Amino acid sequence: MKQIRIESVELEPEVREALAHFRQNVDAWSQAAVSRPRTVTPAARVLGWRLAVSAAFGCLLVAGSLTVVVTHHRGSQQARQPVAPPVQMQTTAHQATAPVVDNEQAEAAARDVAAVEEMLSSRDNSSPDNQDEQADASLTGDEQLLAAVDKDLKRPVPRVMEPLAQLAEDDSTE
Amino acid sequence: MAAGILTIPIEAAGTEAFSVPARGAATDDFAEIVRRHRPQVLRFLLASTRDMDLAETLTQECFLKAHRNWAGFRGESSAVTWLMRIAINLEKDHWRNRRMQFWRQTRTNAVDLDEASDWLPSGERTAEQKLLAREQVKAVWRVVEKLSARQRTVFLLRFVDEMELSEIAHATGLSEGTVKAHLSRALSRVREEMKGKR
Image 1 (cartoon, rainbow over the protein chains, first blue to last red):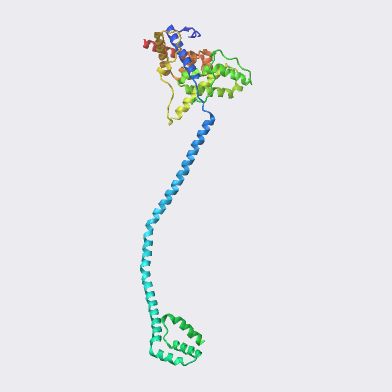
Image 2 (cartoon, chains in turn orange, purple):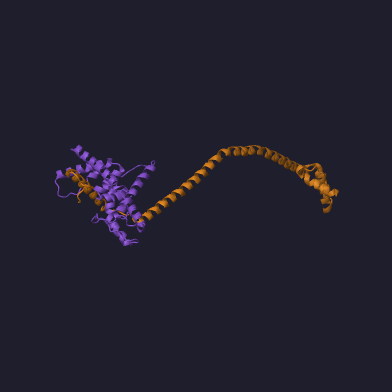
């Protein structure tokens, strides 16, 4: 080690010793730090880790997006449910009024059927009809047919047959 | 921070100034400069910062900057003086940037004085001598910590890197008289510390 002095001023032995120890201290520290073993992470491993982290983040992103979509879908379904009761009420109201209409139609049909049956039975059982049949028996086939038609035309037309009767009348007038 | 930094093994730390290279010196010349002076630069920065990671980073930056400006090195001063000047400026810039970035976490890896004083070559010393040396080193570290930045730089260049006064003046950009004044004040502090210790 060089003689440490500032120009001509010599340092005291104790100060010089302290400064020499200080220099040795810094030198030993720097040498120990520089010669310590170092671990250098291989670039490939770092790249692998980066890829893995990127893939994990990608999966998280996709899973998050799916979760949001599913949650939104469920939420919209739940939001639709409170609207359903009025629809049901409408359908029940419709169902409540529909039987009334159906019953009326059924009654009308039943009345018509009853009228037709009555007409047929009256044709079969009434005495004038029996007399006509007896009279018709003496007639020939064509005459019998025409007579039957005329007889039917004379009878009151059931309500269900009114449109047909109307058409027949129109045809006849034309 | 230090992981992955290319390090060159320390060999015999030559303190002699490297011969002035010719302009456009080959890469081999610069490699020789690094080999010779890297330990010296690192030692100075380590003593200045007491942070090995920071010292290594700044040393690396110092040689990077030197390599970029190697062609412009005119050889007006020795290479080591030139390198020390770069190192001193880098250290100043580092602390200036640190002050500007006050919102950042001001974490530092600087070791405390006790830990810094532990590093002593074992040699052939008795336990008492080792303890005495450790106390002396700790006292000097305490003084170094209290010095102003300029005084500390001058003190460390003189007593750690053993540079001449003229070289210190070149490296710091101060006059030799100012360098002497700084050294004188620093040494008086050391003396006071030693007296106080006794």
